Amino acid sequence: MTFSMDKTKLVEQIQENLKDIYHKAIDADSVLKQQQEQGKAKFSALFKGSLFKDQHRQFLPYVEELASDLVLLQECQDDEHFVTQLKVMVAKLEQMHKLLVEFKQLTRQ
Image: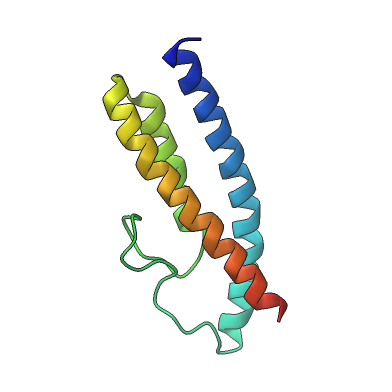
């Protein structure tokens, strides 16, 4: 198996992760909107001091950034750059998964 095939599989796994995160983000943003309308959810950003470039009060803009990162990852020509981009992408995905799980647990209470 070549590194090229491995790259393809990695990209496919990331795409599956993004689909999962996207659906969870839509649900979470709906809950956030309700809470904000009720005067709750008083925060300036979901992620502060993180790997994400910008700060947002909803999940979907972060998903959009991840989708852009995936495009950059797919466009990487050399293996070293691919690995560097992959590490950042995986770290961001982990942050998103973790926050979505924590958010869901908080909203169940």
